[in-house]
Image 1 (tube, rainbow, N blue to C red):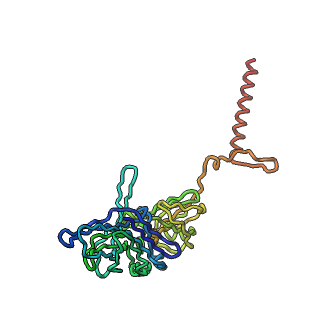
Image 2 (cartoon, rainbow, N blue to C red; image 1 turned 120 degrees about the vertical axis):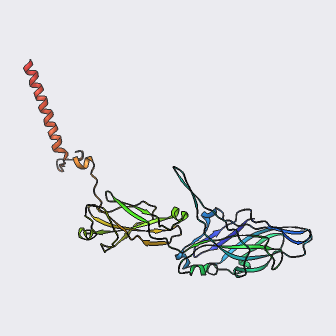
Image 3 (spheres, helix red, strand yellow; image 1 turned 90 degrees about the horizontal axis):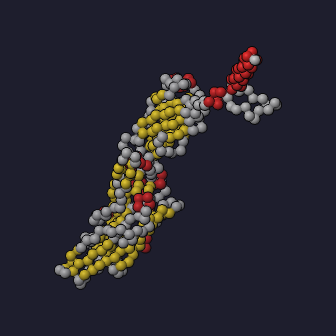
Length: 364
């Protein structure tokens, strides 16, 4: 059955829209020869890619009404003497880790998803005994219950230690008030307020005005987090004396665990590893460190280890032997390293021609 879950968060409205899925279908015996079955389903259109994700910063601005719209269908046999009702409740499950399959050439990451709602407990029921007008219809939560995002997610956001949970809003169908549900379905947003750990490793290679920084994933990151992890590299200039205090020569790259001040750190944007740091000055010592940013946007602590690089100018053939002489004029003469070489070649050619001419004359 199609279910739409429309969730307003702050200014932009994060919407969960309906798709079809086969949900749990159960039978419930009322009297001999009398049964009732129901179907309830919920899954985001687009799968996990459409699932709202809340991080620590988004928890600071929980606004908007949660508008949940369920479509249900009932099938009855026999003489029904009770009136089916619905129950609305929350259920928390762990955010599932992705499973990864690696071949010689590719790594495929597969996410799992919809929530399988279990029987509601008394302490997580939002609204019970919701009247069902007919055998088919809709249940619009906002017309029954003014439920805000803060009420739905507030206590999870308030956990100082951080939390990583999926909070589902489930709808259950009961044959009558107080009885066991015969069908359940629901889904909900993911919330992750746990920052990632410090990067597991850090190394850097200097180039011409750039540094390429390899950053290792935090040791406790799962498959999903590793696949989504990006890194911010912080870098700052060091004088030769400051670099020497770390045991690093101006001409060498090295790694240190101390972070005495060299200057003000500048940050790159968050990128997948390896991170390219561009716009550096050649022949200047730079100190670098990095921190991880998970797929929810939570930032972790900076790496304890720092790397040092000294970008160097990369000289090509023209840099070493000069550029072509075109474009020079009498008023703007260009003298390059190639000119003496060219002159020597020309002198050698002229001398060779003269010797050949003398040899021909003598032979004549």
